[in-house]
Length: 554
Ligand SMILES: [Zn+2]
Image 1 (cartoon, rainbow, N blue to C red):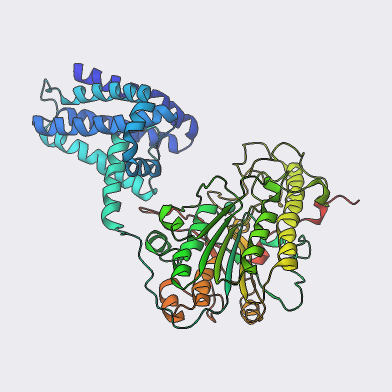
Image 2 (tube, rainbow, N blue to C red):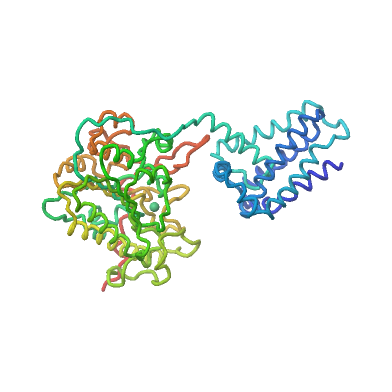
């Protein structure tokens, strides 16, 4: 009796999480499933408490108590459920445990009290023999097997509102499984041989931010000025049309653009392959990273100290307002191309990530009416606040602000680059990390990309190759509206002089391959455990054109 009371009291610590899950589910078929699962797991806890051999009973009690402290203290501190991803990053940052103990004393004490009740409730000697030994002994295994399997097939999702004791134990099982099956190993050194001299003195990869392919004049008559439509004489802009991105979120696209990755093996290659900077250095290029988005030396999109170690010149623009950062980036590229050194330059443009109302100057706002200005001038990037922009009229204003931003940050960027850069012996590949859903169909919602179930336009990006020789024109014609980000990394390696056959074997086809590309992006980049990538096709016919009716006659 006292044991039951202790276990019930322990479970009662998590009542807020239970209500939160119920509120989240609402009256849906998921509700009885959740309640059923909760009751089953609670009964399995009771079963474990009835195990007669003290060593097994106390063993489970200690495991459940430990899981309760780990998840409970996080969830109390964060006032939110702990995801599997968070669980892993917490294990991986166990070195900071001292800081955590100091900073979260209150939540840890609360979770420890919870865990103590559970420990004693399960561990104490059961009074009667109400449960057959075999049933008691198998109850915790049953609970753990059921929850682990369920979380596995949902890629780690679904533990919200279930007892921390169980969720923490199941996360541990999944983590153990992943450590064994996904043995990724350390990052490899450059192993591919170079079989010829580099094809260019300078190689530049420009990764724009949130640029929708059809909003550029090179891809749609209603698109805005990109600066790419009429290059200066002697320069060739090979337009691959509307291409598919790696994925519809910044992190995955940037990570894979910098490390390469095929559709079949991007996880392994991202985790263990050398970065593009490592390849460039090994091929004799000085490496330059121009980041117009972050400041103060901050890394983003999965960059770490090791990758930073392969970058010779790391450029950010701490003192430049957000609206002028892409102009500063153009200046940095112009400077790098002006010296006679062999260089590889990677640019993370500021582009057109939300908020965009103030990412262009007053003097460059041909598209009207726009969103109200002056509220977000110093903000580089943020999440779209719920309900801020919804409704057809707001999205119309958003699209006009977006057009002004694109004309300024893309058109202005290439105008400046083409006017001042020495491009005779350079290759420039230009694309965007992902596209944009701008709600042209009047669809509701507040997201522009990173949707859980993305539409085609979230992965529809521009893709051009710029050089003086014009050698990319044939490939661009062949794969017009039918190429993808996946082909950029092998293209860069081949241009650096790496053996094209070995490059293809490791990283897939390059932009000038004769093989067709599936032209799909991955809607589930973080596919792990039992989940598979979700491939979304990018076809021009499925993408809304920029609505001409957005723009007021002047
Ligand atoms: Zn992005």
